[in-house]
Length: 132
Image 1 (cartoon, helix red, strand yellow):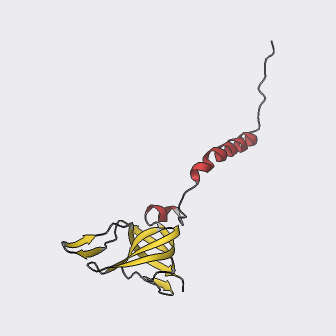
Image 2: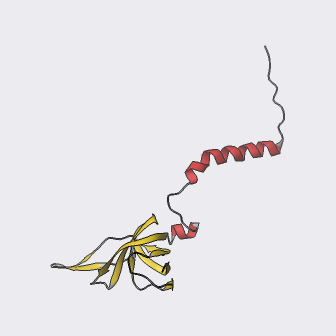
Image 3: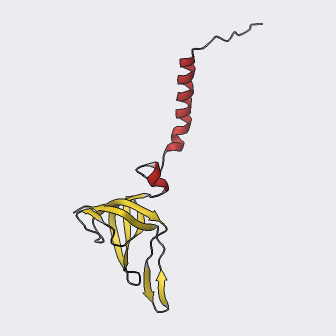
């Protein structure tokens, strides 16, 4: 009967092997579907970015409801947030990029029974940038 003798491994080799195995198994978990700028922005202020495909005026609340398309789509409320450079919101067809507060957007539209709230993802703030 043969006995196997465990050889003493170098601590550096063990460390490299542990790191390599960890990266191989955790890499698929680390991929996220959204391109958030940082951990803080993803938790407190998520990002959005894409072409403004549609804009709708919310007459009762005096705000605009914008659908921003891919690559990071969102249905957001725009309430005269300060803009960078070209100042093109709420016009459809421009590219927009910025941050928003979750669940703070208010878009109310008139109906025969009164003003009704339209669900959305949040309020664009503190700033937003647009293309020409």
